Length: 137
Ligand SMILES: [Zn+2]
Image 1 (spheres, rainbow, N blue to C red):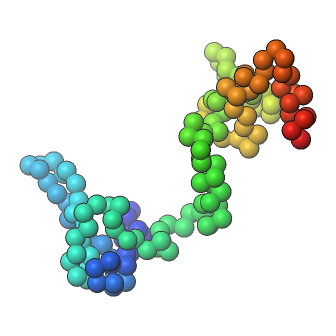
Image 2 (image 1 turned 135 degrees about the vertical axis):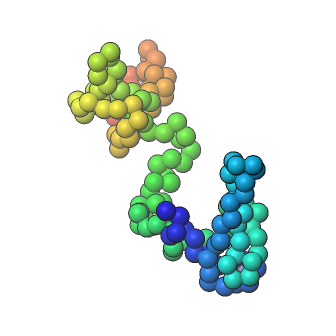
Image 3 (image 1 turned 90 degrees about the horizontal axis):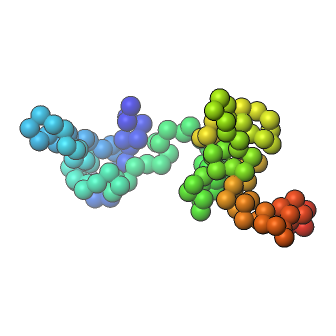
């Protein structure tokens, strides 16, 4: 399955070539892999050091999609999962989105995500969250 990401441009010989993987065994247990340039035999210490050709990576997403996805996760590691959303309502039988009035999973992601913790802070007695929203817009 890794065939597609095996194309590299070797840092040692500059060749447009491939990576060769050699499994490392400790007894009968596979403990890792050694990575070599097919052309010159240069060994890469770690997977992260291998100069894979980006164009050869599986193109499931276009570049535009990819940067968008990166943005989604940036700075908000907790993510935009329904579980952390103020609209998320959970009861013993079903998890619901109170905004879209649909059944959701805790791990669902949503464009209308609104962080629950933040919302609670904003909703202190003196601050009506709706008023705050309106002021923002
Ligand atoms: Zn090489």
